[in-house]
Length: 227
Image 1 (spheres, rainbow, N blue to C red):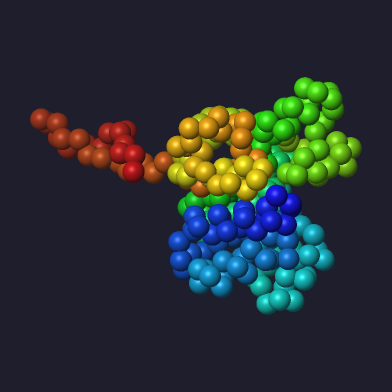
Image 2: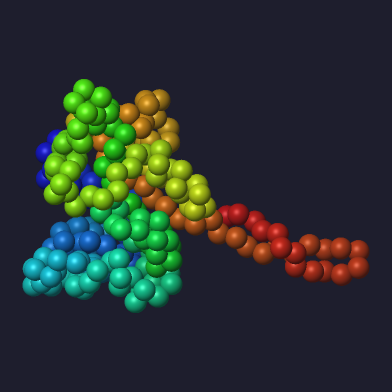
C-alpha cells in the first residue's frame, strides 16, 4: 500500500465517521484536499489550519477556508465546542506535546478524529529485532535523522493515554499494511501487531447532574449520569 493510496483510504474512513452538514476543522490540512472532499460529499462547513504557508496558499487559491497557522500555538484562538468534529490525520506523532493537542481537539470539537501509524506493527518489530536499527516502512518512510516524527507510539500506548485522560473511544478502525480494514475493538486478530494505521473517533464522557430526593428536602448531589 503506497503512501498516496494509504492517505486516500485514511480520508475515506474519516469521512465514514462524520455526519452530514457538520462543522469540521482539519488540523494540518495541507492543500485542503480532505476538507474539499468533506465539503463536497457531506455538505460540511469546513475549515483548515496549515503550518506550511505555501500549501495553505494553494488551498486558499482553490477557494477553501484555510488559515495559515501553527496548531501547536494557535488552537487557543478557537472557541470551546466551535466544531462538531476536529480532525488530526497522520500528524499526532509529529506534535511536540501530543497530550496537550488531544486536550485541545476535544475542547474545540464535540468529537475528534485522530489517525496515526502504529509503531507496534509486526514489520517494525521484526526490523528492530533483526537489524537493531530504527525501522523504515511504508508508514514510517524516513531515516531516524530526518524524520518529522518525534513521538513513536503504539496502538496500546494511545489507548492507554485515552484511558488516562478519560477520553472515550467511540470507534476505532485499523488498516493492515495491505489496506484491509477492520474494527480494532471487535477484532479477533492481535490488533497491536497487525494494525499498520489506526483511526480513532474520540469524545469526552458527558455528565448530567441529577436531583436526589430525601425525606427532608430535595437537593442536587455531586452525582452524575453518563450519557
